[in-house]
Length: 153
Image 1 (tube, helix red, strand yellow):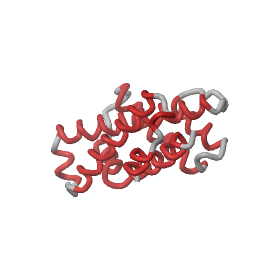
Image 2 (cartoon, rainbow, N blue to C red):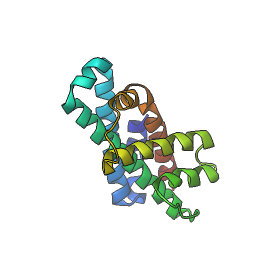
Image 3 (tube, rainbow, N blue to C red):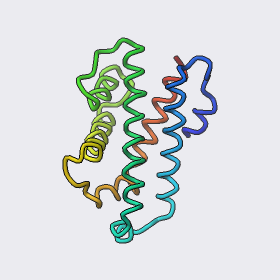
């Protein structure tokens, strides 16, 4: 669980900005989990603009923090420089930190984040609901993996 990892971090060895990012990640993932546990129907979710905004923002922040932590690991270990945010996860896969298939999933999350942040198009609300109710475990798993890595540095 991410909470356990955060509590067990050797804070004195980590840069304050990484600690702050991990704390923020824990906060937004907890908020998303709380919303998911409400078991709101897709129909009700589609009608609730405020809830959609909350989910969008927290997914955006979660993905952004995962990118930041991944970039920290890549830089600290002198791995190849990623070409873009999504490529950061590919670099971690190339180095054996993430499985290739899982890195592909995380790159998809970056795509969703880009749609939200840059408003390339309206966010597909059904896709957002699926991200909340089914796929957010990818973010939790990535958080756990990355947290464990930074806690050993």
